[in-house]
Image (cartoon, rainbow, N blue to C red; front, top):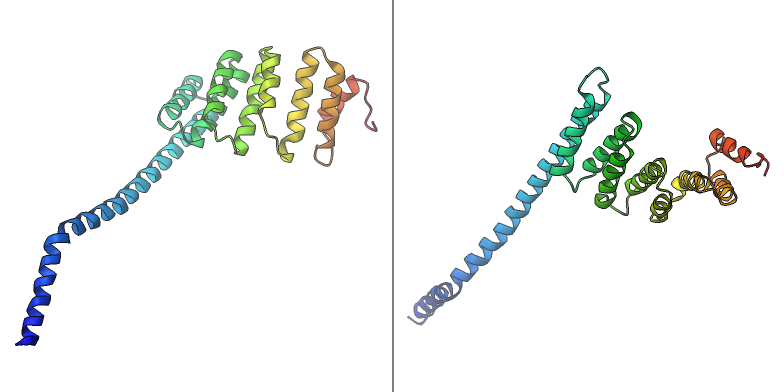
Length: 218
């Protein structure tokens, strides 16, 4: 009888514990499952967003490359704006603005529009990425084209330039300084660019240096 009573007491103790803690346990399990499935749903959503952004960017590239399309310019602008509106946090949107700015600057000669597109890219790009350096270089180039020389220098000054980009940034700095009427400072920047150029040299850079009285052996 003692053993039976002990067993009955154990069963009753389990029942009592379940009455007391069962609801909170189920809630805890439910919350854990909600977190797991919520995380999976979020990951799936992110994956779908990336796929949609990639598809939209592919559409932009196709439109930009289709020179036979009479509406090409408008199509590129429309698709790039959709990328910017729907996928602002993605690298695809930033690349889209780079393409749009190139069209605006080189094909439409609309410097102000190109600067606006690149400023948007600057405000949304990952500041620690190599893409940020590309955006800053393009923006400074557009600002130079628009005669906004102090802004262009300030833009270059924002960059934490890696070795791979040093020559590009220093050469552009030289171009801006030369446009400001500061040939000595421009020459110094060009010389730094030469030091960081790839083996084989930069023919255009050498022409710029020669125009400032600097030979290849300097």
